[in-house]
Image (cartoon, rainbow, N blue to C red; front, side):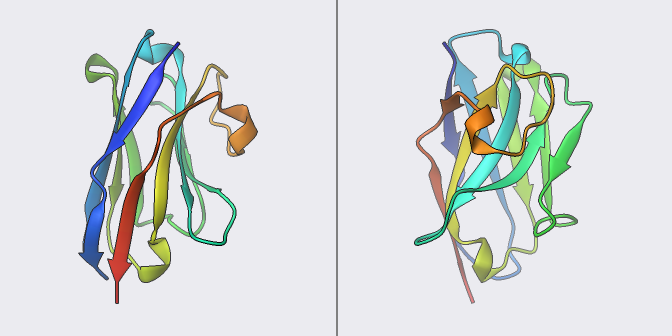
Length: 124
């Protein structure tokens, strides 16, 4: 089984940038599509961005389009989430999730493997 591990979270000011990383071990990384989700206190977990197995297809939530970019390096077993122009409403725990499905799923139940999350806090 594959196990994703997130890193790169932190406390930043509005307008700053962060890059999250998700490194996976345990199986052939390129077999899995990868998604980033986030969950703020008192809110449901929501899809942020996803990328296909090869990296040729991506999808992102409307709330982050134009600010967040997802990419992957299969040689390094890593997926990145570049987050620019951060806003206080981006504050949440960010989770990396992986699925054997061959498309970029946007719902949490489609993903069978989850990391423990990394906290992103954006101050105004």
